[in-house]
Length: 155
Image 1 (cartoon, rainbow, N blue to C red):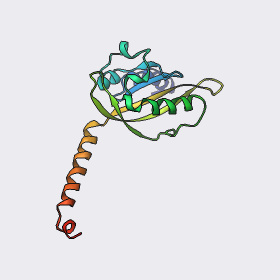
Image 2 (cartoon, rainbow, N blue to C red; image 1 turned 45 degrees about the horizontal axis):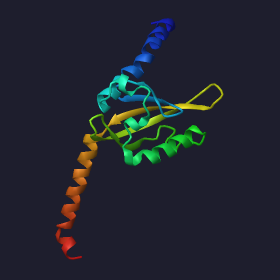
Image 3 (cartoon, helix red, strand yellow; image 1 turned 120 degrees about the vertical axis):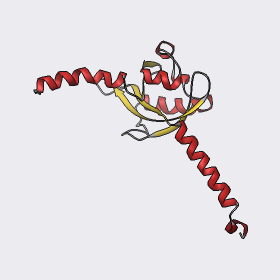
Image 4 (cartoon, one colour; image 1 turned 90 degrees about the horizontal axis):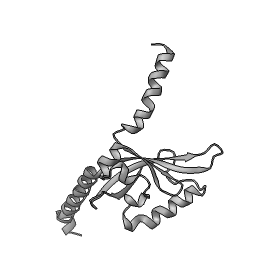
């Protein structure tokens, strides 16, 4: 395969990576309005692309977490460094269209213009609800075992 063929293949692949990625890819502008919503975001959150585009991230951020979310988001848009840069994984609750909660893990990519000003954020999100629930059940079971163990009774 020549470099030219490789480059053509890569040029065709790159847009598909974002669109067909099995993880949700969401891009929000400076104001937190959704500008890109891939099919995996629709699968995970239940909103069609047409329902999500133009909406704020409040669409998926639970109400009780919105103030904290926007404080951090606006701080980063103003130029402060993100606490979650460099590929750090963030785990938070989120909301589906039907109002049900899910647990997500995500990384962010701060988007900058040609002069380095923040213009938005891309997020790469994965639904980890099943794993979160399994860990929570195991923790409860462990707590019960500890509470009922003979060593616990002698304390």
